[in-house]
Image (cartoon, rainbow, N blue to C red; front, side, top):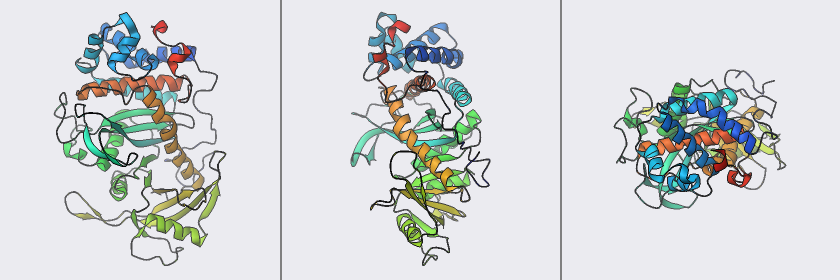
Length: 422
């Protein structure tokens, strides 16, 4: 049974919470099976036997090495089966293309773990110096200061139990690193490289490229725009025809479009104020189970519109049509704790809250597992090297998910999984 009203082509949220691997398929034997399942799929695009062998060894190293998953540490873990220089060349200077491997992995995982939604999630990777691919100075909200870092956008497929990366895009500063192809900023053939000029455009383009390459089944897109320009992002999503739920900042200015709100009119108000006004009205308030032992979510909705958006060309576009603002929180003094904006205004509130939960799954489960298998650990200036490493880290991530291993389980090496399996 679906949980929606009149949105059957967009929200496929089933009542069964048990899709994905079961808890009994954990440990070394299950991981061996998932590696054996994935290897012929993802390494088929490598033209030479020695490349396929090194790809498998690198995958074993990502899964088994402890600590930072750098080329040096992976080579040390593998011992005399491979030398540091050969592995470095395989990742940084070889000629194999990462796109076919990434696409083969994505199609296989989509078949094995059909997603309920796609989550587009930004990832900041701090670096100690300026000699890394795509590194730039940017502000870190978590640290409260400017940092030297890589800015990465991940596109995730999310089920009730798993969160797996389908694509990664490394945001490039104006000065491209060594090894960056001239056309690497394009997303699909014919795309203008200027499309990468803002993080908002990068997030939308990352999903559009992934959807085109993998022929993604139609599902809602969930984005975290809390630290971005939510108005521009939502306007771009609407222009691309994407059904979405987007997390926005409390100070995002919106136009109330709901006669039930007290004093609604043509003047824009901050999203947090609109949500509190709707809560005071009590006619669009619901307590919905959060799916955890915590207090049920206090969910409030109000219909809104976007103000006119000033485009990069300097022209002002018209605001979007009817949108739904969702205020979410536990009913405590600091409410709302989260604010979300969606164009699926007629969808069931429980279904929308489940989509919000899928975004949290990426933050709490997907990203920690991606970090464990090395998404943050590439060292080097090569743009191609970063993408090869990220692709193989995605294979390691998928192998772990398919084996039914949780990101908070013991490190894989502690289970005795590693060199003995090579």
